[in-house]
Length: 415
Ligand code: MN
Image 1: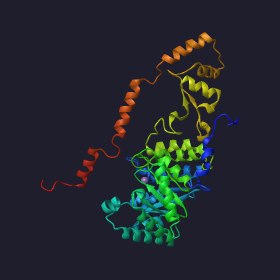
Image 2: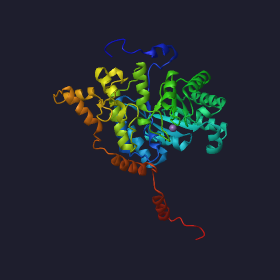
Image 3: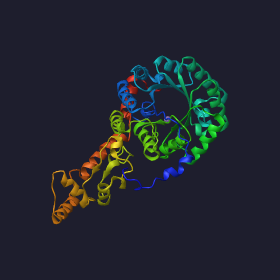
Image 4: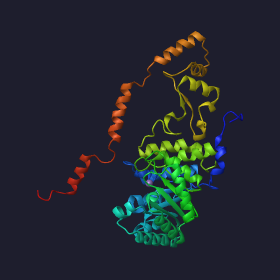
């Protein structure tokens, strides 16, 4: 912004209500939760390419995966842990000895130990009593600390668990040396105002030395809730590039970072001009297309077509762009079509040093507005049919699955 006073900034009015941490550690989950997006799998080499770029833009912690999942996953974690990247490599473990040992063996310096917290998870999924959950958690944390790891403790479904149990569990693991406590909104049911209440209560009861959150986007609130948590002092928010993750995904890395940088002027330590290239790489390697209207990294985020908007942008970009495209490593696009106005055409003609008289400009405008362009509705319909056939049902088709069943030799008992 060159001239002061062109737009009012009311975020200054709420500054006293924010307790932003002194510094931020962006904790990326793209290679773990992001890989749990239906149909997504990364090879160890692909994980390394993404981790290199995450390290390059300044991400503090990269969750490389859960080594106990498969030999390939263990190889991926080891590959990242020994690549000499300028970021901390973390691997995850259930509160099970084999899981913790697999992380220790992987070479990762950071571990996230996780267990479920809510009654529905304890009763129906884990079939564990609360006392046993506390015991297993304490034992796992103790072992990881003995091995010299930085330990984060996570509970799934924290925000739907009885608070007394949450308090007891987190206090116990912190007592045992857990370095960072993570509160998870596993099914995305928090709202900013409720999450603020919850975290204020959590901080009062547990007194975490270092707080982190894990937010899902089931109700479309993952970024808002993550921002709320950071405003409550959370220092190491979990994020995924392009908002990848289970179901509707996690808080998007680019959204959380740009909320802080672009709205509050808070320095996150992320080199934002690398965000678009990172988004493209993850789109390619995950095979999950970024929606055109996705904040900051979607095709349309810096595109202008309507005459009124284009005219405004050409006069001053602050009219319709809250941040400049260069901030995320992009360029603005003026789209020519039905809604184009004269100002965009005048600007476009300059590319070839042309200047049109008013009558010619009006004739050009008339033709541009009715020209359908090369992308017809038939093309789009074909593309959508293909897109839907791929994304309706990621993973194996029924036919592929039953072929494997047959090959394995599973037969009907009474046949
Ligand atoms: Mn998750």
